[in-house]
Image 1: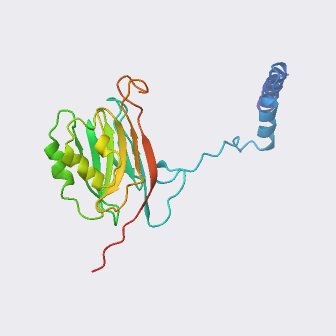
Image 2 (image 1 turned 90 degrees about the vertical axis):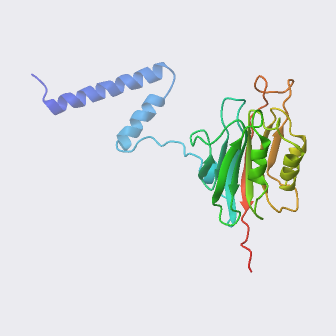
Image 3 (image 1 turned 45 degrees about the vertical axis):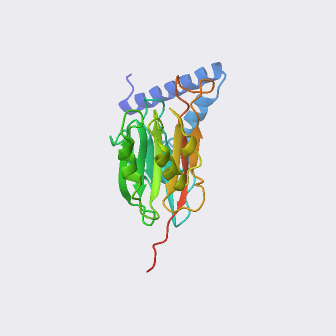
Length: 230
């Protein structure tokens, strides 16, 4: 006598389930039984997944306080992977945006509202340093300056360039050298050294890549500047 269609399906399911449990026991694990039990108890609910850690603006692990800007900067890796500059969940510079290049990658930002004013890269190996000076000389008070190195940030630097970056709050611009890794956030008119700066020297004994030090990644919360009241 042939089994009716629905009864045949039930028999097949039970047979498959028992086979699964038997194999699990033979292999020394209860995962098969636990999974079957879960499906029988609540067949519509998928197995619970581990909760993903919450990410905030620019991928930060914690939210920034009010009246601050969230940022993340990554320097270039050797001469292969370009740098990234993110502010308030907006990518200002990256390879995907096709606006980064060898040398210094610089984004200028309004310190009051966080709006991008300009973003350019300057070749510090074979470029003209006067182009960089034209870019950073006329900054307005309170302008935020985001800098990420790529390949070589320093060969064409002169004394004036180093002095300007030092006045923007850099502690290492005066010593920056060939193929160093450098990320920095400064501002026009700061009174103290910036807390947002990282630097790794190019050294044969410690370089992560052949001829280049490791890439740097820095994140944080920058206090928003209050608009001047006239």
